Image 1 (cartoon, one colour):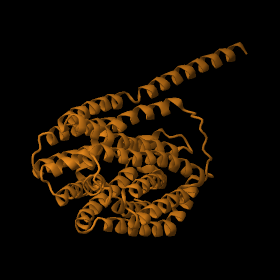
Image 2 (tube, rainbow, N blue to C red; image 1 turned 120 degrees about the horizontal axis):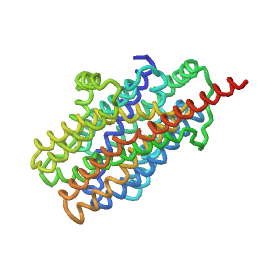
Image 3 (cartoon, one colour; image 1 turned 90 degrees about the vertical axis):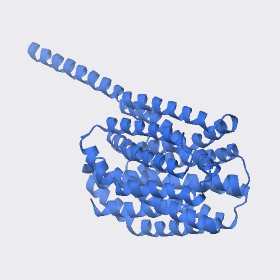
Image 4 (cartoon, rainbow, N blue to C red; image 1 turned 45 degrees about the vertical axis):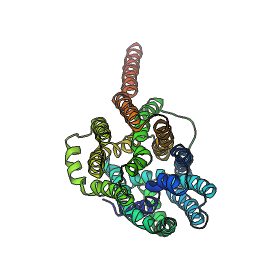
Length: 411
């Protein structure tokens, strides 16, 4: 693995350690500390994620236009300013404003990180994206463990530690990411391509959009663990520390389970579609388990199963996006993928909160399982447009060959 990728991995671990101090506890803080309803909490998280959708698209655009170094630095600075202000101003109104800004700034960072990872190791296939994914979840494990502990003393300390982590990430990015970008340009021996809105390969873009429909629906289900299920665990007397421990276990399993997952993936060869479909099937199983959970043990088993599913499904999506992306569009395509995930995080809490407030948690689980089935169908057929396009190209080429041959004979 290239040294440059290790620097990106270290940066992502630090970034996510800081971020995951806060995001698993957002719903609990809004409901228990700020005294708002689950629906209001879902609306706030939706606004946070909506800003993230925009941030991801902006981050992808900036990567293609000004490079990964400047786009990542910009995102870090915006996030750091908002988190720092949150240390001093965290009433409900300020919380909403700064959470939205944090959602935008942190999202700007991700397309650049993923696109740079793919660029520094172009022959690595899914490996660089899997490495960033593992780094993300290692940070989640550390942050969730620290966050639950810190919040049990004083919740505002969470913002302080988050800010310190962002400062450290900023220092690493300033010192090393410029040289990584220079290395990428030398490898490609090209200049930065200014992006345009025009979609040149419509078949590949359409394939990405269909795949992202499934990705979006999967994230609507996954984000329930950070919103409605977090409140559900409190109602069943699962402590805040135990809930944070679930995310620590999630991140630890992703890191420690990589040898096993790598062995399984090796037998898929390049069948990323199969990898995603198996992951979706495991997601469904996890919600069947959590629907019957009545204690911490039940949630623990469900989280372990959920983690296995995401280890298979999540890294495969940006890998496919990287394969589909035309030259000079890697940032744009990664921005779409990250925006899709953020869109799921945007809709999920509000949808889950409304369903639970008006019906019950069991109804929500049925809806989520239905979404996963639709996601599996979208994944199964996402590349049909590619195959049809390839067939048309073959027919056109054969026609041109025959035409050229006939003209040659006449001449």
